[in-house]
Image (cartoon, rainbow over all chains, first blue to last red):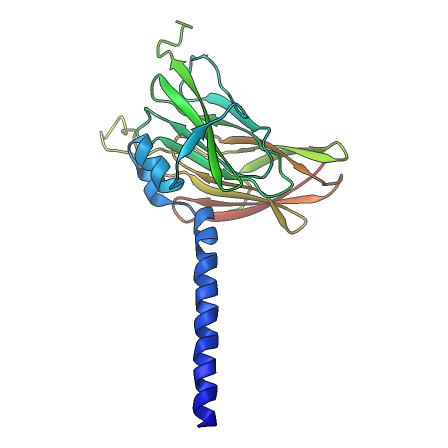
Amino acid sequence: MSMNRRSVIKVIATGGALIGASVLMPRIAMAAWTTKAFEAEDQATAMNELLGSAVEESAEVTLKAPDIAENGAVVPVTIRSSMAGVEAISVFVEHNPTPLVAEFIIPEGTDADVSTRLRMGKTSKVTAVVKANGKFYSASKEVKVTIGGCGG
Amino acid sequence: MAKGIIKVKAKTSGEKTKVKLMAKHIMESGQRKDKKTGEMIPAMFLKELKVMHAGKDVFMANLGTAISKNPYFAFNFAGGTKGDELTMTWVESTGATGTEIAKIK
């Protein structure tokens, strides 16, 4: 009888450990390359796959991008946020074949201030989404892409 | 993987370390055609990039094909002293990976 009881406890213990592991899983999955989000062909789907939550516009998110980009192959952008507890920053270009450009994970100690260069197929809205304290805040800007290359 | 692809400029001001890095990579989007054969050039791009300092992650990026050729990133993190090492790990869409080390100036 006592043996039986012990094994029951053991089962409960391992089950508990498994539950613990599955609770931790989403955090790990968040950091991984999300194929579905990166391959989504419209922004709504990409956002949904990556963030899975509503996005609210916020003045505390700053997206610095040129008004006119003469060369769509290299569009410099900077995303900043004055918010505390920023965990991640993602960038979307609405009219690109795959709108999700990149997702940056901001560990503690790193500033919510990231610069990079994007590719843009054509004139489009660029949206930066900042994840802070589990919520999502965004800022967008229309960037005009001139194809002529003579400065328009 | 003989030579590194990432160029790093990391400077510390005492409290913060400013990191600018550029990876030499074509970032082939998979949407261009080969002019000679008319066939699509398969995608080949950097998928993941991680920067570590003193055993701690300071920056991680999951990238798509809309990042420019020769990707550039700039960020700051708290801490870091002159001479410290930064470890960059990257993963390409082909599965190739690399680890490179740069020093903070």
